[in-house]
Image: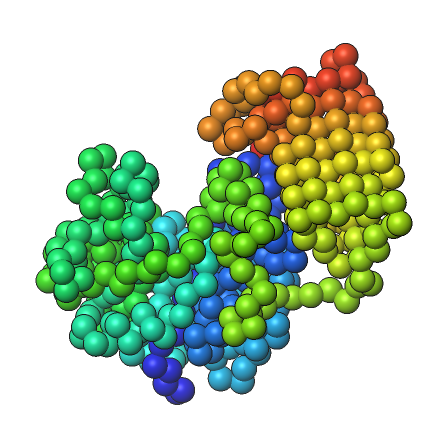
Length: 424
C-alpha cells in the first residue's frame, strides 16, 4: 500500500440545472470556459500546482465528455503509476446499485478508493468553481491549528450570505457555529465547499451519517463533526473565486477574462491552467476582420467583427457578421451578416445568414425567468438557427429549428424554442 499524506476528492457529478440548455447534454464541470478550457480544469490545475498527485473525480450526470476530457490525466501531469487521477462513477455492487445521492454519500461510496492510499488528510473539492488556490497553504494552516476539519471560507456581501453555508468563527478562526443557507445570516464568512479533513474524522462521520437520505457535507457531515466537538477552523481566502452556477455568473466570469486588467489572469507563468488540447491549426483573421478585447480559440476563422467576446476553437464567423459581449463555443459556424449581442452559443451550432440575436427590450422568460435572465440569448449544443430570423433577450433555443418555428420571423424576448427530443 502506498501512503499519501493528502489526496483530493473532486465532486464533479452535478447537473448544473441553473445553466439551462448549456448542461442539457453535458455535466457542468465539462462546460467550456475561457475559449479553451473546461470548468473542471481549474480545480485539477490547482491540485497539481499545489503538489497533490492523487485525485479521485466523482462523476455521475452525463459523464461521457468529462471522462474523455480527463482521460488518464496527461495534461495535468496526473498520469502516475502511483496515484494520479481516477474517474469514479457510481457502480453496481453485489447487494445493490445506487446513484450518488449527495456530496457526502458520493465520498462514502468510495471509502475503499481512499483507503488504498491510507491518507492522513482528505481534501474535498467541487468541480464547478473558477479560482486559483494553493491547497498546500491551506494544509499548513490545518496542521498549525491542529484542526480536525478546516473549511475554506471567504467574505461575501451580507445581502448574498443566505445563499451559502455560513461559518461563525472567533479571532483565532476557530469555528463556533455553522449555518447552512441561513435566512438571517449572522456572519458574511461563506463556505467555499472546500474542506480538509483528518481522514479518521471524515471516515467516522461518513459511517455515522450513511443512512441520511441525500447525505451532504453542508447539511450533515459538518454539523455532525461540530456536534461531536471536533476542532474546526475557517481558512480565510481572499483571492478570486467564482461559482459559475448561473448563466449570469458564467457569462460574467468569461467577460472578466478580457477586462483590460483581468481580475482573473489566465496567463500567469507560475500558476498555469492545464487542459486537454486538440491538435488543430492556428486561428485565421482575414484582412477585413476586426477583433477587439477578445479571446480567439485555435483553428477559428474570423471574417467579420468581434468585440469583447470569448470565441472557442474551430469557430467560423462570416463576412459582415458582428459579435459583441458574447461567448461562442467550439466548432460553431456563424454565417455572413449576422448580428450577435450578449449571447451564449454552445458547441456545434449553426447560425444562418442575416440572423439577429439579442434585440429589443427585455421580458421575463416564460419557461423559467430565474434561469433565463440577465438579458442573455442562450443556445444549446448542436442547434441550428435558420437564416434571417431575429431573437429577443432572455430567450433559449435548443434543437434544429426552422423558419416555421419563428412567428413572423421572430422569437420575442422571454420566449423559448425546444425541439422534440431536446430538453432545457
